[in-house]
Amino acid sequence: MAVRFERKNLADLHPAEYNPRKKLTPEDPEYIQIRNSLTEFGYADPIVINADGTIIKGHQRRTVMMDLGYTEAEVIVLDIPDKAKEKALNIALNKITGKWDNAILKDLLVELDLEGYDFSVTGFQRTDLEDLIQKLDIPPEATEDGYDAEAAAAEIEEPVTRPGDLWRLGRHRLLCGDSTDPDDVERLLAGKQLDLVITDPPYNVNYGEKVDFLKKYRTDNCRPESTIENDRMSETGFYDFLLTAFRNINGAMRSGAAIYVFHADTNGLPFRQAYTDAGLKLAQVLIWEKSNFVLGRQDYQWRSLKT
Image (tube, rainbow, N blue to C red; front, top):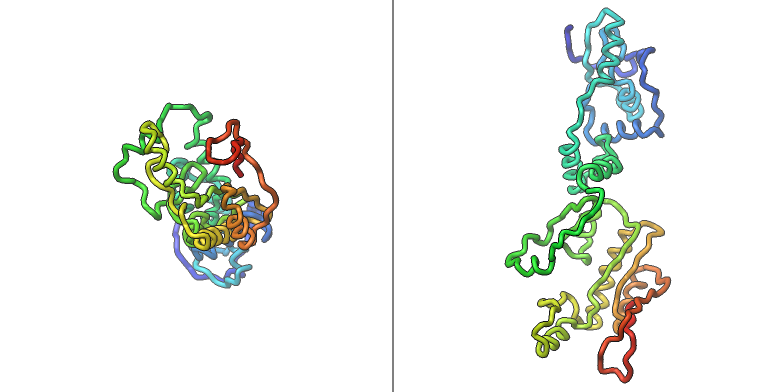
C-alpha cells in the first residue's frame, strides 16, 4: 500500500459517510481538547485520506482546523481501492491504541504540572491525574509508624531543602519560598486559585526571647532552639510585612473563598489593619479556649484564649 504526503485543500476532503465517530460541536470537551492541542502544538498529527479524498482518520481534526481558519494542510494519502479495507482501517486507526504505563504517565503529568504547564492540551484533565495519584500513591489508610519528626530534624546538620525547591506531596504542593514574593505564590499555584486559606503568620511577640529566658531556669525545656523569623519587627515593619502577604493571598483567592488567620491579640490591631487594607473581609473572630490557664505576671490568671 503506497503512502505519500500531499498538500490538500481541507474543503476538498470528503468526510466518510460511515465514520462511526460522533460529530463534535464547539461546546464538546473533545472539540475543546483538539482545539487547545492545535493551538499549543500546531498541526502535528496529519489527517489520513484515501486517494479519492475520503477521510479515513482526522474527521474531527479537520472540522476544528477549518473553524480555526486553516484552509490547507499536509495529509497522508493512501491508495486503497477496496472500500471494505478502507472502512476497516478507519476503525483500526480510531480504536487500536496501546495501554498506558500508569506510573510513568502519572510522573509525566506531575512533572508538567509542577512546571506550571497546562497539561489539559494532552487530553488528560486534572481529575485524571488525581485519580492516578489516588490509585498509585496514596494508601487506603494511614498508619502511625512512631516516627519522631523533632528528633530527626535535630540530627540534620545541613538542610536538604533549599529556597526555591517545590515538592509534590500526593495531591499537594509545598514550596520553600516567601509568601510576600508574588512570583513564589504564582509558582506554587501554577495558575490555580484558592478555595480556602489557613495561615499562621509570625505574631511579632519575640517568642525567641521568652524561650531563652525560660532555658536559664529549666535545663529540660523542650522548646525550639531557634527563633522565629519576622517575630521581632517594628510596628510599621510588621504592618508592611503582613500587608504584602495578605495582598498576595487575596490575589490568589477565588471569589467567595474562605480565609482563617491565626494571630496573637496583643498585635490584633496591625493584623486587622493589614488584613482589611489588603481588601480582605473581616467577618468574625473564632476563639480557641484552652483547658488550663497560663502562668504570667498579670493581676489575675485566666484561661488563655487564642484567636
